[in-house]
Length: 310
Ligand code: PEP
Ligand code: MN
Image (cartoon, rainbow, N blue to C red; front, side, top):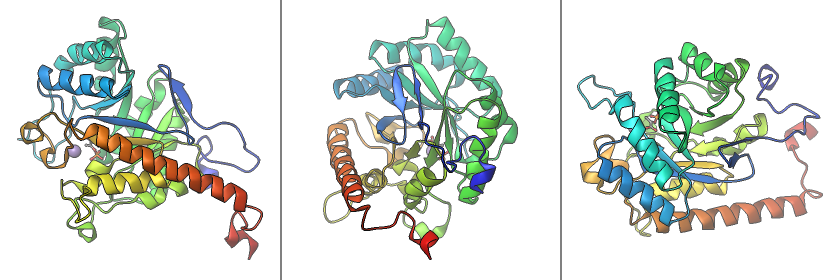
């Protein structure tokens, strides 16, 4: 499998850097960015409150959905292109440099580029490929053909890891290797009462097999705002599990008033919870860095890959 990942795979004697820089923000297997924000853009006021809160807490990345692939054709489909100019202008006003935004067709990429040009590039966009489109090969090739905007490719929720990694290679094979690979839980009832079965044990696996930074989405994995007796929300717990395993990006649904959110209201954290969430993430990241240092100091004692020694 790894050999089939011609562009994204980590090959022997291949020590070159992982990651990329986009709009002043560097993504790699060695750092971490949090993308909190609206699952779906709704009102200007909620968007502005969200960006202001992110800026106040030192964040330069956000999530904002304009195009929403929904299970039912009768559910809210997202505001679409009409919201893009004011969303981008507000992002610029609050110093947001990268917005993760799902696209479901090539036309959406054009609409995003036009709105960015029309508003004078006040921010940047990472094109999110949702789990329902992981094997939409024409879409993968289209986002791969353009080299400007980076890609967040979410793992398919019902296919193997290898199949999802090959989907990322599809984008790369068209020329764009600025790709972050996203874990967001797998669709099975074995994860109940969570919406999906958390798959963050694959963070180190993707690091080992590829050069891609890895994102975890605790909101879509858990899907609910339940907390355990320790007082910690399950969304926070699984985010920390991803971070302590070395995740490089967190995608988190956050809303000023979750009960008014038009999509996935049950899983959003609130703006008040953001500083607490960021501190919890910082603790988990620090623990990861300590674990990494420990592994480096113990390397003489533990073979890198025990299976190869047998
Ligand atoms: C999302 O992040 O808004 C989303 C729809 O996620 P997924 O594709 O993982 O379901
Ligand atoms: Mn969703």
